[in-house]
Image 1 (cartoon, rainbow, N blue to C red):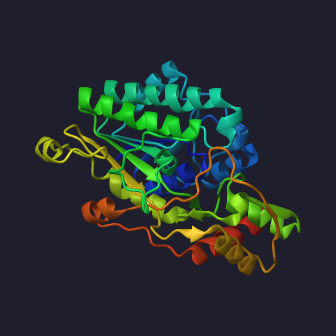
Image 2 (image 1 turned 135 degrees about the vertical axis):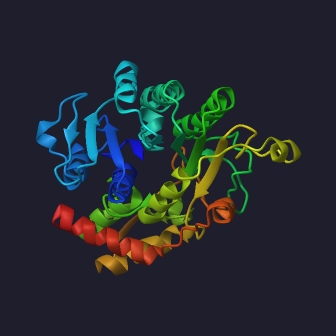
Length: 350
């Protein structure tokens, strides 16, 4: 397949690109390389994929030195003309859209960044997919869309009308926009609600990176909501496998089924939404203890109140993806943390 993957200098995009490249596909990656977090880490991911970061120029192809099927461009999603030109030249079969302005807490202080990247950028992706007859658009949503949901587990059939952060609101808006294009233009689209992704090459603003770094440096860690939180930590390999499987199964829509049992996660249009989570929430304090055991040092804990935009618990119901695609994320958190800490110490030389 000829695949466009957005956000390939990012955490998930880097791993997904590698998986599709290794499977023999032709992959074009794009990323705007913004400075929301360390650009050096983004360059490190690109270099690991054979991209010469010293040669990076805007909207200029860089061929991987290690993967003949991989080409990378520095490109902003808001640049509609450049995006159209890329679609026209490459004639992609599938688009996997993972680029976004990330971070729940950052959206409190930098709201405009989320509208530009997550709204306008996604609109440009949808327009290009429509114009160039893309066979399947797979895009990243987020568990944050569940917002004030108080159910024991979060199901894609649940209403998601009460987000509590602008980041979550933009991700829910993406799902609604995707359905419009799927319904009007018969564009096959699948949204994936990721649950607390972690693993090697992870973002430095995520809890696992922050905790590991602080513990190694004998500095205190901020433990929000006094540690009374649950997270469905999902290892990066499980996310990648889910994306690969989903990409190969574009939705077709089912008018009869939808008419009998309306559900926000599917439609008479070729539209689908899945959760991808480990389905085994871990207490934040237990997660910290696993990091402590792996690192071999105790954390100095600074207990804090719940932060604006944070939710108490995330817990994925993954029944649909198990039943329809035969796949269930199941990497134990102990294994995932060990793999992350090993990478972290090597990359940061700690």
